[in-house]
Image 1 (cartoon, rainbow over the protein chains, first blue to last red):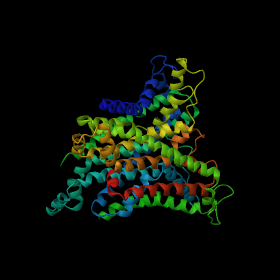
Image 2: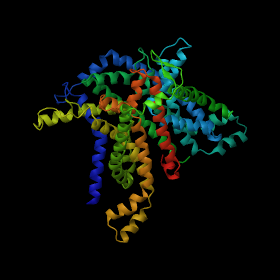
Image 3: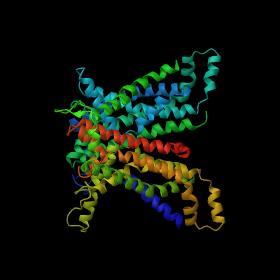
Image 4: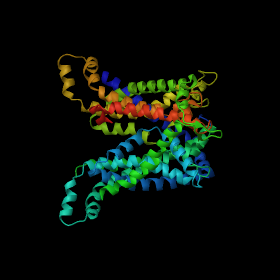
Amino acid sequence: MRKHLLATYSALALLFLHAPLLILIVFSFNAGRFTRWEGLSLHWYRAAMADPQLADGLLNSVIVALIAATVSTLIGTAAAYGMWRHRAPWLSGSLYLSLVTPEIVTGVSLLALFQWTFRFLHLHLGLATVIIAHIAFSIAYVTIVISARLRNCDRSLEEAAMDLGATEWAAFRRVTLPLIAPAVAAAGLLALVVSFDDYVITSLVAGVDSETLPMVIYAMARRGVSPVVNAVSALIVVAFGIIILISQHLQAEDESPT
Amino acid sequence: MRRALLLPARLWIALFFAAPLAIICAYSLLTRGDYGGVETPWTLESFARLADPLYLAILWRSLWISTLATALCALLGFPLALFIARAGRHKNLYLQLVLLPFWTSFLVRTYAWIFILRDTGLINTVLSSLGLIAKPLPLLYNDGAVLIGLVYNFLPFFVLPMFATLERLDPSLMEAAADLGARPLSTLRRVILPLSAPGFVAGAVLVFIPCLGAYLTPDLLGGGKSVMVGNLIQNQFTTARDWPFGSAASLILMLASAVLLAAVMRSRTARELI
């Protein structure tokens, strides 16, 4: 009896977590404009595809996410590998602090930095400032994922390789890198999603010509009722879901003993 | 050689995380310029203005909404975590089910609630077509909507550490309690709940901190009527153009988050869970 109660309660909690997104996806296929079911249609998906603002936003988001994920994965992997032997309390402390800093604070402080810099340099807010900001907040995610993997790696393997005549670089490239490769890929995918999704920081450091997809969606959601937002949201949910499942699969592979 | 590997991260974090915070610290002590921006003289006036009743009300609302959201997450999350911890071989599947919505876009998750709660939204449409209401219930743009959004967005933050705690409990303790004649409810109250205290602490802090600093949820679901500190800060840096005041509020918010986290991190068990 009590067991059923717990199971029912948990099922309701899981329903609470999943129902909103499922409802959103279902209604993205609704023929009508309102929340009354009027038949199956791909109308809103076609409308979303045809919307030039969404297309611009998507292009900007893809550019930003690809560059930010690549750079932050390189920087984060190097940092995690470096911290594997040399303790770097200040760096790891700052990385954790950057994770718990409210996004709005990170955003306004970066805005303050950029505005201050622009007094001396004739630049303006745009894609470049967005990319810089995204790299800054993605490094922590990457470093944490890769550090977790390195913690399970045996350091003596590299030492053995060097005893056998490998240079430090060769030992890394041929011994440690293959061991952490799945984690590097997982971290890169995570950074991609984190960057692609960000609205708060981006909205503060983006210029007029650098609206990302979340900014376009936000503006649409603010303007009010448009099932086009449902269609785009459904696509994002599915795309993110796939990327995250791959990323978690790669991280889970890591946990098997080497 | 290895130290050189740390250099790019050190540089990037110093330039684009630490330096911006330093600028905020400096701005919080300056005076607002005539056309936005900041000017000397140095002053503590921005911090003093936070004590203005108008702003105290916003700080107060942020605190109680976050507290309530944390309590609701505990109420929903503890039984869920207990269920998952006892789910045997389906454990990982359920854990994935908790995490999956969390990894879909934050913006989309918040938008989903607009779709459900607004005047022409799902709940109002269903209720009015059933003839239960004559005019739409005002579900969106109030504290309740913000609360739902926060609980929805941060529930996984509570479930994960709670699950980790419950999973580590020695099952023989529960068996011993049962053997000694304890009924399930008193085992829960006198054995499981006290032993899961670290999970409650870790989960509560992990929910409370992002709630306190929330911006997007109160912005979209509160619609300007349920303002929290995050919205106050955003407003000072955009429309109001009072950078010193926005900086002071940012520092207070950041300090509160860091102090809370540091307090919890002093406990070893909590550290392992976070």
